[in-house]
Image (cartoon, rainbow, N blue to C red; front, side, top):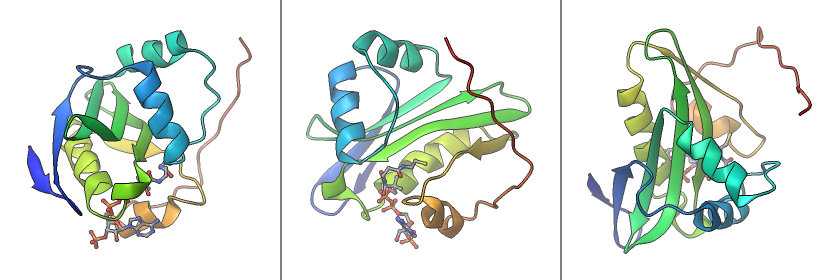
Length: 139
Ligand SMILES: CC(C)(COP(=O)(O)OP(=O)(O)OC[C@H]1O[C@@H](n2cnc3c(N)ncnc32)[C@H](O)[C@@H]1OP(=O)(O)O)[C@@H](O)C(=O)NCCC(=O)NCCS
């Protein structure tokens, strides 16, 4: 799927092809998407374990990424969504999210926001919930 972004056309592709831990880490750092990730192995493991991965490419340059864990029936969890600052506000995040929504149709899509992204999700029709709990399980 191709669409016209701010400058050049951006293509959304499914899967891990072309991705590397270094490319993903650079995108997270620049977006910024703050994650406690320490090694290339950990990053790759996260991506290999994901149910769906979508990447946005502009001339073979990684400009956006989204990944989700889904059981395909009830629940889907949007783990990460990040867009390169140079192309933010040009529709890339929404295009990635649209692909996730299509892939997870029929399930409830949940996510954690940040002060940077809360209004983005609200703008796109997500509803805030107050019945979520979390536990950090030390490894
Ligand atoms: C949040 C993020 C993914 C949005 O991506 P993006 O490509 O800039 O968003 P889009 O251009 O697709 O925006 C889609 C719509 O949301 C709006 N929007 C984008 N960012 C917004 C924000 N922070 N607040 C309110 N609306 C926002 C756009 O104006 C656009 O509106 P429209 O469809 O009515 O024209 C991107 O800013 C980002 O990577 N931020 C840093 C990492 C992050 O916070 N990720 C989310 C993790 S919880």
